[in-house]
Length: 344
Image 1 (cartoon, rainbow, N blue to C red):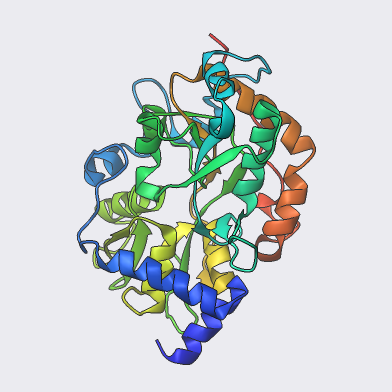
Image 2 (image 1 turned 135 degrees about the horizontal axis):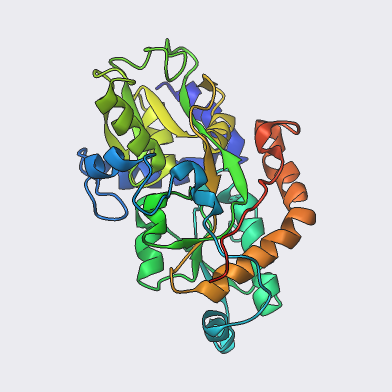
């Protein structure tokens, strides 16, 4: 990639020098990783997970309906919330796993003092902290790679993850989710000079495709290639810990395309005007707040917070961070309607 393209791609971050540092750090991390496929979040082989993705399981769960498998809202405290509130002094904070590299979702703005975390997901975190602890800034943010989200929750490193995390049946085996707070779908991101036109038209043949390890994008690619929907020559071996790593690899010419959620891909295209989204979304994805499976009171409380947030707060956050890339009247421009399980 020539120097002009690099400079152009950094303008979306509002500071060439600052973004250059961020990309350099991200690239250094990427290049230390093996080029082979990384393990997924639940430790299961990708083929095993892909084989069951989208199929009805013995418990009747389908990924297309997984977002409805959450507990009804409640404003009551419980053991998990009591433990959070019992923290004292500087430790009295909500500990939340987030992204710090996804432009307009969760990213460090180099133009703010201390490079503050900003974005659509970050706004939601502040709202949750305000409700539970009475202070929107009572948050300890922890940057969590895509492939470590579930591990961080299960090992108690965080109280929750708010990080563009798609609700799926497989993940529901390991963590609990709130009701959905955003709807999107997988899309393809390529250089403007690319001949790739979309996902299902065969133009991804002989293309090197990057996805984040542990992502629904990789599982979809693997399943479709096994079934013949995706050309067998599509090279899907490149998986990385974070979405930004795919963007860097695309900019360096190490891959030909990125497959990720359209909402994230649109933000990446906004960072680099030499890139474009091609084709329509080819999946439906719902983002949820992920928590421990045993944290039933916290799940119900977050669902209560989301009821209020949809009515007052969600739209303002969308308009501020996402409307410029996703549109004010697009499908994602309204919060998805929740459905709940019986409390049980």
